[in-house]
Image (cartoon, rainbow, N blue to C red; front, top):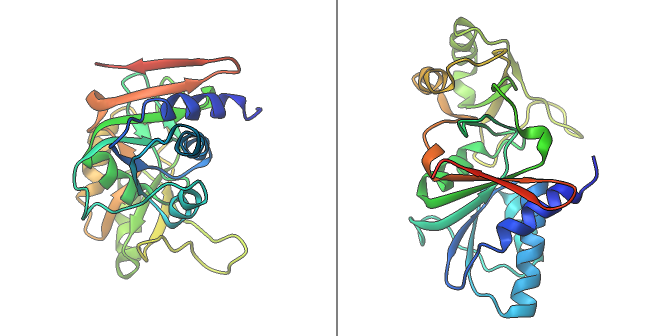
Length: 228
């Protein structure tokens, strides 16, 4: 797939940012197109806003585009968050976390009044079925793995690339990628995973569907989906 669908989605999301906003900035390639366009708007239009990044990677990229940054301490309520997703179903439930930033992404999502999810068409599905990333306290890895197996998963510790050993998140934790197959009840599964001691957060996002707008980038233009 070419970059055009991602670019179109990211640019549409960037057009929705207004002067004075506090804007959550997610992690991933489609969001980076939004940042690219926001940087152009800062330089060309004098757009002024504050970004709240969800990862070191997002912060590094945002600074490259001249986006002023702050944290949730300074902005506990955000006007909007722009983020991506690994899968989106028709009810706007999400699976996120391929970039291992879903814990901070969920904090930012919760703080935002509106959430814009930017995706290419391959991310839209009838039923969620991608592996669910689960951020785990390293101390509790074995116990969490056992409990996730009892829920029907096949948990796999995410390994680093160009690094021996497990991926370590920006928060100092491990990631278990959990294949549950087709997820018929994502809300119930998210609740069950969250109840396991040692789980920090999982990549299922089911509580925010009413404030989510999904922008699906196409080769030409975008398709916008929301429940409000």
